[in-house]
Amino acid sequence: MTITDAATSIHLFAGGCGDLLAFKEAGFRPLLGANHAPPAIATLRANFPGVRGVLENIHTLDMRRLPEARALIGSPLCKEASPAGGRAAPKAQLTLDEAEENNDKKLPSDWSLTRATAWDLLRATEAAIDTGRPFDVVAGENVPGFGLSWRLFNTWVDGFYRLGLIPYLASADAAHLDAGDEGAAPQHRHRMLFAFVRKGLPAPDLRPRPLAACPYCGPVRGIQRWGKGIRRKIGVYGLSYKYVCPNRRCGHLEVEPITRPIGDCIDFSLPTRRVGDGKAGKKFRPYVDETRRKIDVGRARYGDKPFIAIMRNNCVAQSLDEPIGTITAEGNHHMLVIPGDSLDNCRIRMISIKEKARAQRFPDSHRFQGTNTEKTRLIGNAVAVNVGTWFAQRLAPVL
Image 1 (cartoon, rainbow, N blue to C red):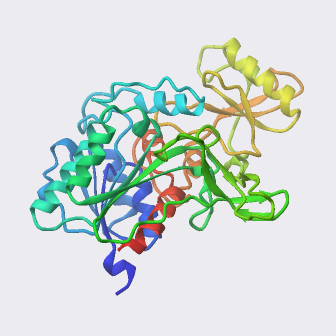
Image 2 (image 1 turned 120 degrees about the horizontal axis):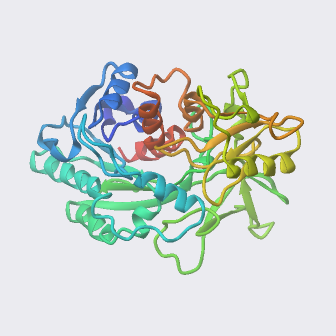
């Protein structure tokens, strides 16, 4: 029996279909994807014609009618899900991602609304057991704050344990997981990964081993080392854990993972506009002082090399030779700047939908459906494809 025969999967919250694509890449056979948003199901049907798409709010989905499958995959939303065709959703995803990216530990403590979808995974697991078709693995990802700040996280984990599944947790940055044909994502995206595995099945190996360079040993696969007093492995690279060389001869020196630059994703043939010409539109609207300041800082820092100006609090500019910051579900925060002989003669544009998708490691052939705003939401809420592939490759031996 091949893995494709054995490893069937169901994907709840299948927005941009990052996890669905990743698990298919890893040899799984997806059976169904569900989401409340029409553009999400349209995206699923455009890219996976053999997979059943269900357009329904996950809160009201009858879990007893899900097909039998070995794995249930679902990453609880980081913002409140709205019914199909309904009201706009709050921007909690953006708040959480930006807070963690900027090392802000003041995360929301009240997760009763934004984590409502987490209980749907537990509900689906219980329904599968009640119908005599239990899942062997229930898995997904979320921001580290999901495990660090949600007051009911331990209760949620205990619920799976009481249903006969053993919890396994890991933390990783999408920029460090070189899985799939194209390797790691050119994006720093800190995530907590969770897998609940049926008792009696093998434990998955969820230890990230990124490619790194040891100054003494040369190229190595780094080993994750956590700070003192951290019992549960949930956190952010650089604050909660680091990577060290696996070899004793160098004394396990700290190593920096090798990353992919965002410059690999940039299409320099796309049109730009002069800063001095202001924002697009019939009436002249100059760029605000803060935007101009960030462009000026980038010019001073990078000279005549193109760079990214970051339209976020506590962020200014970054090189194209490093991964970009987290791609979020709402808004556009990354401006490509091509320096000129003056600030007004710099040419700029916001990064495109396709470039955002590339930063999430989607192939150019993946077709997102909907308006540009809806596509941005699908991409920003998606599981980075390389993270999903890495995760699927480590869950496959369990089955």
